[in-house]
Amino acid sequence: MNHLNNKFEHILRLASFIPAQFAVNLNAAYGIFRQFCYMKRSRGAILSLSLVLLSAVAVAQSALDMPVSLRVKEVTLEQALLQLIKDYEVRLSFSNNVLPDIQISATFRKKPLRQVLDALLEDTDIAYQEIGSQIVLYQKERPDIERKFTISGFVEDEDTGERLIAASVYDRRLGKGVETNEYGFSA
Image (tube, rainbow, N blue to C red; front, top):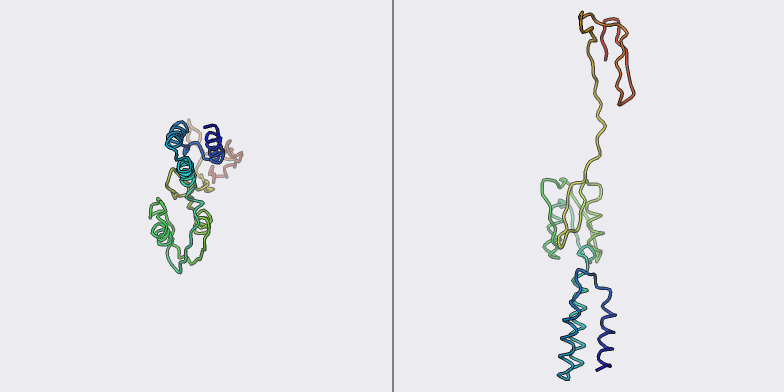
């Protein structure tokens, strides 16, 4: 039995790169392994256990690493994405009204989905993120657009209503200021 335990440990070492979220319950796997061994089917046990552990690795691969081929000519971004969904059953999630109305012509041959999406979404304000088993496309946050505006008006004495000439008007936040003109007007 020690010989078989060593084989089991060897299989576990091979499977040690399985991410935690896809790890197999090793105690249960060892129990199955021992049952097969007692039934004198040690090769079958090793093969079965190897397949279980390796299938967990296949599940763990990111959808973004999946190789895809895509050939589109003069289609919208939406049509290109729908083609990926149809051909590869990729779980893409997006809202049609955030996609830009652009025409795409491109050819990709066995490239990772990540590279294809990067190319399709280049020069757009669309980004993507893998969430669970889905790839969600979303609109990037736009940096604050520098807004320019003018504040203008007359500066008057509160008590008398007299327009004030050469009065300072100062914006502390911007560190800028102006003076009123000979009519008490500032712009």
